[in-house]
Image (cartoon, rainbow, N blue to C red; front, side, top):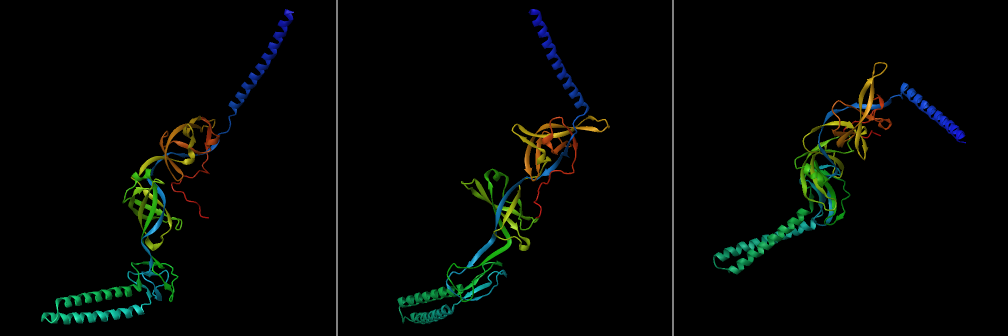
Length: 376
C-alpha cells in the first residue's frame, strides 16, 4: 500500500513539474520574442525648452465712461420753440441747442427794468433833496432799499430768460434726441446726451490680493471685440481707497486715449495692467504638463543608445516640475527642467517612463501667449 502511494505521488509530481516547466518555457520564449520584436515607438509632438520674456500683467473686464458726459436737461419748464442741432453732430462749448418760448418772460423783464429805472430816478432825486435837507434820511434809505429790490427782481427775471436758452456745457458729440418744436418739457426732462470722447474712463474691479501690484500711473492696454486687434493705451488715474466688503474687490479707474473717437461710453473692454518689470521664464505649452494629485510632471526626451540603423533611440523620461503662472497657451516652469531639454507636448497618455518615442510635429498644440478665437 505504501509502495503504491509513493508511485502515485511521484507520478503527480512529474505531471505538475512538466506543466510548470512548459509554462516557464512558454513565458521565456514570449519574452525572447518580445525582446526581438519591441513595440513600435509612440508618435508624439515635442518642443525644445527655451527662456521667454514674461510681462507681469493683471487682467480685468471693465466698462467705459466719458470723462465729461451729461444728459442735457432744462432747469425750467417751457414750450420748445426751436432746435439748433441735429442728432449725432459735434457741439462746441456754450453752443445753443434749444430755445424755449420766452415771450412772456421777456415782457416781464422789460416791465421790471422800467420799474427799476423809476426807482433809480426817485432815489437820485431824493438824494439831491437830502443834500439840501428837503427829505429825511429815512425817506432816502427807503428809496435805496426799493431800488435794490427792483434791481434784484430784474436780475432774477433776466436769469429766467437766460435759462430759456439751453446751451452745451462743454464740447462733445450729441446723441439722438426725441424732442421736437412745440413740445412742452418739464425741469429735468432729457433733451439729448452730450459726450466728450477725446478721453474715456475705464472702470474695472480687482480682487484685494492684486492691489499690491498696481498703482496710479501704471500703463494699461484696453481691447474690445468691437475692434479686433485694436489696442487702446492709457494710465491708471485712481484707485478707490475702500474695498467692497461684499466682494472684496477694489474699484480702479484708468484714463484711455480715444483717437478717432472709436470707443464709446458704455462699452465693455478687457484691461491689461502692466504690473512690474518683465521677467524671463522657461516656457512650455500648457498641454506639455500633466497635473496629478502628487505633483506636476512632464516627459523629457533623451537618447537611449543607437538603433540597428545607427540612428539614436529616443526615450521618454518622466520628471517632476514646478509650474508658475500661465498666459494664453503657455505655462512658466520654475524648476525641474533646463533650457534646451526636449519635452513632449502631446501624446503623453500612451507613454510610461522609458517608452520609446518618435517626434512628429506635423500637428502640434497651440503655443500662443495671447490666443484669439478664429474669425467666424
